[in-house]
Amino acid sequence: LDVFVYGKAIKLNFDAPTPEAEETEVKRFFGGASLVASHILELGGSVHFVSVIGGDQDAKEYDAFSHPKLEKIFFVDKNRKTTVKKRFWVDGYKLVQMNQVSNHDIDEKLEKDILQKIEPLFGQVDAIIVADNGHGLLTPNLITQLISLSQKYQKPLYADCQIGHHPTKPAKHHFYRGADCLFPNEKEVRSISPAFDPKEFVEKCGVKNVVIKLGAEGVMALFGGNLINIPGEQVESVDTCGAGDAFLAAFGLGDRNFPKETLVIANAWAALSTTLKGTAIPKKQDLIKII
Image 1 (tube, rainbow, N blue to C red):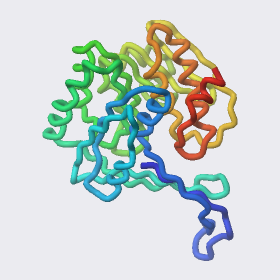
Image 2 (image 1 turned 90 degrees about the horizontal axis):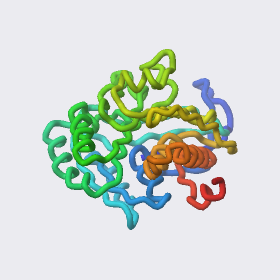
Image 3 (image 1 turned 90 degrees about the vertical axis):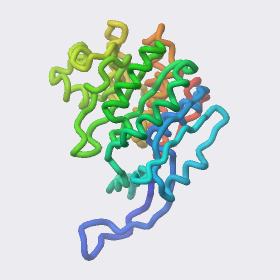
């Protein structure tokens, strides 16, 4: 869950060098992997959404996450807190982010339950999209099994594997060996290839393709052996939070036979997402206007 608290500064506190602010607005969104699902749904796709939630009050928020083209396949881990990330903004500046997370790996029983439930879905879908935020659902073994299933059913597996959310959780890109495509940002690429070489990144990680998100500068990809550069979309950016999730969703709905066009569309959709506060979802009609 993403919670954005907005306010305006009133004065400085007497007992600490921080502003005292008046709360003006609170916005709540379904974030993380559910944000990727929300983008796919807005763009017209159907989603079998698999995730783990905690056995707590926050998990009940997801009762309201519904759509005609959405199937929720949620597993409850009673030893886990539902992930909630609160961001506090004052006068247009993000002062602090407070995360409620449980970063421990799921146990073997839960791994088996998940695999048993989702394997039948691999024959029905066009692609497997993995939003790995590093909070314990995607264990090395589960990742290996997902890639094996994607190869067995000949379905592409696209993975966005984030680093930097927790000091005890290092980069996991090497666990995705055999995946069709990874979606790192520049920092994540340099952690694998200091020379910032897409070919070296692909070879070291053992994946077929890579799409590198460069923020406002656009995107660079090594896809099908071809190097593709797409410049940034000129928009009035308000908040970049969630832009990578928007990109992953749009690319996942694209046509692999036309990677350049797919990258242009995904890049435009990600740019549109930055024009809204928080992790709000743009409208498909706005994407059509840009294209």
